Image (cartoon, rainbow, N blue to C red; front, side, top):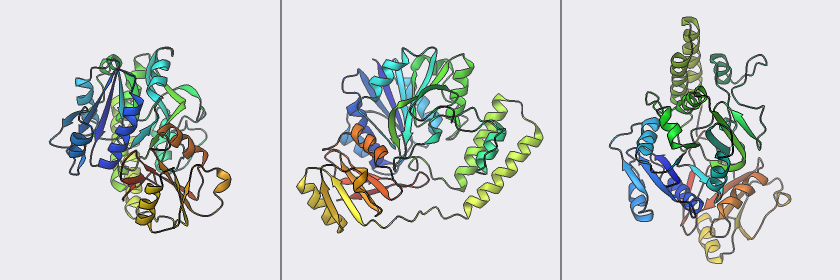
Length: 375
């Protein structure tokens, strides 16, 4: 078998379903398998998997064992020569695995491969390519400042659509030869949810291999579905980073104390923030489809100004707040991903109606939960 796709899921039933629909299109001509590791979801995820995707191998954990351990469980039973670790709140195009399989055999000393990721607004996610974070670069990121003399947290020396060797790739989409993953003993399970991708990337680099950012292939990562970006996130992420420094680098008591104080200060600030983002008032909805019945259904549900179109350009957007709804029965995931990047604008939001499904789905903020509207 050529490829195993491993998805760790926790209470994201609709995002998982959309992800799997896109994955099935991408593996159509590849000898492959899909493994979903469910971390004790309390929603309808398991029932949906059983009914909608009976060929998917499902590992049902009785407790939430964390992201690292759950991925290792999936890789342990994987039969593919290559594995792709994929978040459930992602959407991929039909050619992405073919592209990466073609590239990984040509790139010298290839370790991890990762694509360009965009969020639900079509914005580039800079964590798609990162440097090994020093304690100082993590502190500057923690406080949202930039110091020229300190190597940046993100690998900005490589352009967004380029291909290049980077230190760290993001855990939402990691493509690697299974024997390499096992060579470094996979994710360190002492990390429950954060920084395990940094640790894995660094372990692979220490073996003399190179991690490649593949900027000419792209996927959507809604991001907020994986975790809430609140004070708890800040504490857990930087506590995980502190563990990473202690594991791989010499750490002074003073620096450790400084990081601890910084975590405390920023997490306290975050706790006072309101993470319930205010959704813009949409003045026009555009359904990109050729299905009049679908148009009637969505218009009845929204009860608002909805136009049915076969196409839309940036010149059509103007300054009004527009929400574009892509009908996946009419437009492929590849084209949706391309259109989101082309139409990206401050006043534009996006939703997807997955093929033959009775809901639209999307997310306007990387630091908050997305939206599912059934009709």
